[in-house]
Image 1 (cartoon, one colour):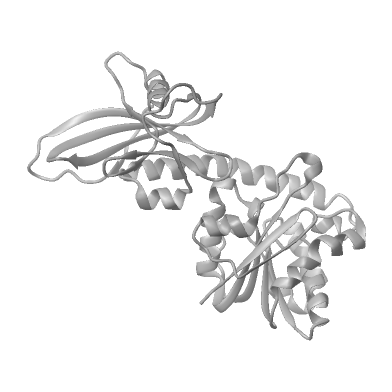
Image 2 (cartoon, rainbow, N blue to C red; image 1 turned 180 degrees about the vertical axis):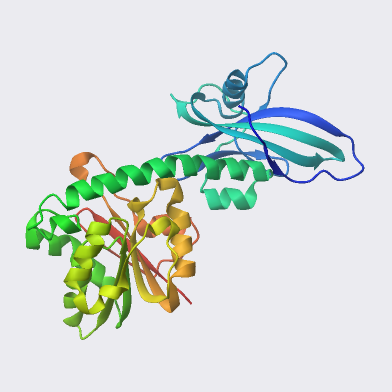
Length: 339
């Protein structure tokens, strides 16, 4: 590893600083959480000091065996950081190197610490070294770019493959009956009239369908949508010509809402697993009007071995308080209300 170091903390006059070379792993559990271990003053990534004559890779493998009783497979190097810190009056100049990694095989032997899996936001709040939170964000950014590139290509390829099939262009290819069976449940979350933002709106068919299903109960929805595939946004504008200006090309992850909405619907699988909690937080904070409702969905295809999340439980585990839930084959959703 080489190049300019990111720097965290500050060197203060007084204590003599001791250089400490260390290496740490960012290990993802596939559900958006990272492995952490307890330190005296906060959570840390697995890893630790590099012994004399030891390579970074060997030191990291050793530390993970000692701390977590797990073998690891190394991924890409994430960079190095300079971390100034003080413990018991002793100043340290931490030279911290970071790698992406994953656990392989079952635990072997006795671990020094109990591994605690935290989502990135929770780790950022509890970690001792700011450089560790930086490394987690850096790992997410590297995988995030690849994720969105693949997802955009796959969405464009599937959704636009049958121009005459509006269900395919909204993510379902099996016709009106199956569409209603798996999407009408979303209307259960709509309890009043208002502005409805569909994050990942595809061709706008879901918004059109929700409008019709809610109208059966005397409710009126004004449609709004974003999608990161421009061709789909054009289809949505054509489907909703009176509200064409309410549709825009944007990626949910870095979307900057132009206004706030009474309802916002999003799907967890549109971002990498590690970013799901942060996506919910961002949209709840930035897109919901006072008294608004965020509808969080998860879709899974059992035929492809995908596991459907219990969204209400997932939200509750991360500190939110769902006010309702619904489901259909291959679909789970829950909603949270903004004060």
